Amino acid sequence: MSIFKEPTFWFALISASCAAYTVLNNLYSRCKSLSIHLNWISYYGGQLNASFNFYNPSSENRSVTNIEILYDNNHFPVTIYPDILGTRKPDSVSPINAFSDEIPVNISPKSSVSVIVPFKHLPSGITDVKSLDFIFNVDNKANVRNVLINGKLIDPEQLVRRLNRRFQ
Image (cartoon, rainbow, N blue to C red; front, side):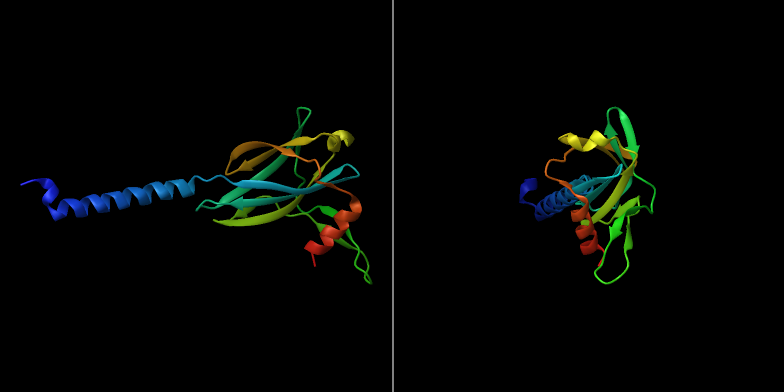
């Protein structure tokens, strides 16, 4: 009698294939890397404000513990929280300061987070380049990303409008 004619063989084969598929799918969903998108940057008075979206497609928590700019072989770390991004000017009320987001940023599985972070003491020509190198420390691993900044630079008036929209 052949083993292929036994129903227990087919049940065992189907259950082993389902288990293998589950293990491989689980490993794949855990290993997905963090997606980072630069929304806009604003440079005023030696301070660069950057707005990032972080999307975590994996099934585990991710944490962005530090962000740095690499420019002319110099590292410029994100400014310690809280820092003033700018002054919001509502219509009939006295000016209100808008503060930066806190680093580290914890991102839940399959969710996204938007942050605005400042960098201080930068050289004035930093916005003249087409792209900047950002170093993101994600889960204690440094990831260097070259990010295009063409068309992402906004002036101080647009910064105030965006801060008003965000912090309403």
